[in-house]
Amino acid sequence: MTDPAPSQSIRVTGGRAGVPLARRVATLAASVRPYRLLVGWAVGWAFVGAVVGLGIVFTRGATGFLPVLRQSVLFAEVVGFTALTSARVVFPLYSRLPAAARFALQVLTLLSGTLFGSVAILATQPLFSLASPRTVAVIVFMNAAFAVVVGIALHTYDSMKRQIEESYRVLREKEAMEREMAIARDVQRELLPRAAPRVRGLDLAGACVPAIGVGGDLYDFLPFSDESIGLVIADVSGKGIPAALLMAGLQASVRSIALPGVAPSEVNRRLNEMLLRSTSDARYATMFFARYDGKSRVLTYSNAGHYPPLRINGNGASRLLEGGFPIGLLDGAEYHEGERAMTPGDLLVLYTDGIIESPGENDEEFGERRLVEALQRHRSRDLEETIRLVIDDVRGWSRGRPQYDDVTLVLGRIT
Image 1: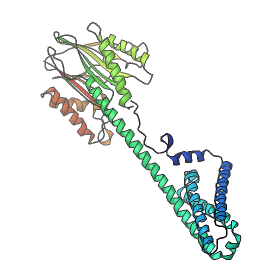
Image 2: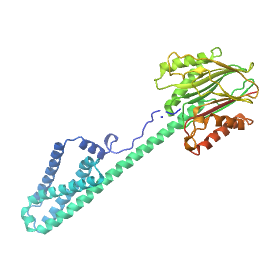
Image 3: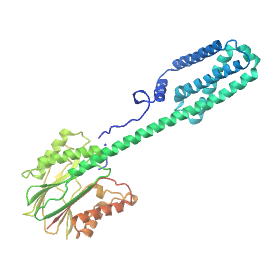
């Protein structure tokens, strides 16, 4: 049918509580209203002014080269402060803008911050600034250009760092999920029959190939005696871990309900009530349950909305249709039974929709007719080999496309 356990993600980040400093600052800035941002910006430049004032106090009385050196140091502080606050506080606010507009605003932000800081510095030494206008102009221009380069480079570095951290986190989560999927696949494989039991007058074989590692297809053999066995095939809605969990629960329920004295129709009825009580409306399953008596060679079955299994012999193929609605779909549903007298050489075929609905060229499905033809072509072979060859035919029909759905095939030959 078309429709994993939650994995424990391993998060590798820097900063307090596992969150990078740049991300925390950016998140805080995004939540700040415009007037608060302006207040913060002004406070920052007040800090720059304080640094400027301290620089003047400590270099008071110096002449010649020292004023130029002092202003150069103060301008460097302006460049660093502008680049850091712009890259990590202001630029994240532009993240949703087009690239051209975002770049233009970044350059304007850096230039305005540098010029604003430069005015604050020059205002503290107006006489020196008036005496050396060319030197001051060169310093301001160089620092403005340097601030643009440093600010954009710092923002690019932060962006690349966040991308690398996110990629690494996703990779670690994917690895954890793959490990858990492998464990779930092993558990599901253990739930399926390891080998077909020996029953008088009946050879059995089965195979299940999930589409995504684990799936919702189920088949099972329930030996009641040396001459009697229960046969189950089911398809749970959905794929992946949720479908596999429901499949495991359904299998346990079948084994507890399908006792030797319980008719196939009653098995489906009880399973329908159980599934309705324990799952949501969106969860259901199609199921075919049959009991084969090796002494009388009679197959008694009830088909709960599953694709009709086939009986193939020299007269062709016939469907096993008697039953009712899928289980877990309709409250109070009733199920009927059918009987087939089997003869030596008959081939009983149980399958899921992953076989006949497998799409090929032009999305044409593999279909029941091709399945019967493949089985007729390989029916003289061993059952396990026949299953393998039929599944290969389905894959060849799909021409290398990803597997459409879980593929399950069970064969029984009357001897």
